[in-house]
Image (spheres, rainbow, N blue to C red):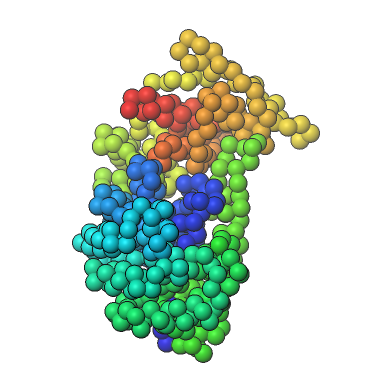
Length: 470
């Protein structure tokens, strides 16, 4: 029985078709990893700072699946991508190139000979850094058969361990695509020494049938999507292989017993957009709170955990966070992730206040919409705004956004009591993300709305300070 690798491209295609927040992308990767998808494909690096941090964060989160990230056809792109993902448990570098004459000249302005050289050199560079390298031949079904055989041969010769051919147009019928794959094995005997992958667009609603037909001809990896996109369905392909795989000698690792529940979670995640009346961006349902530290953890261990949580601290701020952590850890058995968030918010990157709260008035009730009227001070100027929100804190955060004139991704928001009694103090922690980097702020007050506003402004001031000093 041949094990078919199921490669999910939702994360890769979502960049073009879905609007997912930083946190949602990490959560989506975790869901796919728990489902035992063989390969999770990510979007490549376009903005070095933001995308490198995104890939690095997902690499920490994914434990079982291969993490595949595409590179451009140049050495710098390969090195930048590898730098971001090298600590993944199962890294893969992916070299994508169009192989039809129209796309080669339109997208890359290269003739066939130049494309052969570029692909060969890039795969060789990838292979020198990573043992798992994939070559993806885009638009393979419309390429010249002789050239396609040449470039696939070069890919195998230079070290590609997986070679994928794509029906980018999505116009082939299942029997045609099966014949196409069979012909490749005959034209390029070296393909029998590597894993052949397939990808089909779903223009004719035949992608699922086409990839299964290719598996029957020897393909060992298929590209699918967990969320309905223009490609084969993860759920459908997995069900077909589990139900009828014995008839064509194939199996896959996807956990079909968890499939429906996970698919519902992914669909909800991908369809949850940002409301115009709420500053909250993401549709993440569950927070991974299984992170605990003790007094026995050293500086390196604490900093690794902080990095896994999404923070990118300087050496100086790291030392401050660890000192504050030791003080807390000496008084209790365990320090949770939420407590570590509060430590980072209090100890790291303390900066002058660009924006300070002057006054605020909140109107809320069960028969009226929540309204916030805030006045902020910036130097000697008073700035004010009024917004309606889904609740008093929503309204307050939206008002700050309208005053500042900028929206930052609200990654997390936490509130808790820190003292007891009628005049208990409330603590709020706000985590904002800007340029892929996480900034947290803490506020304390007898009024939890006031504590939340102070926490938001604390995080905002850190962003503004760093943007102005860069």
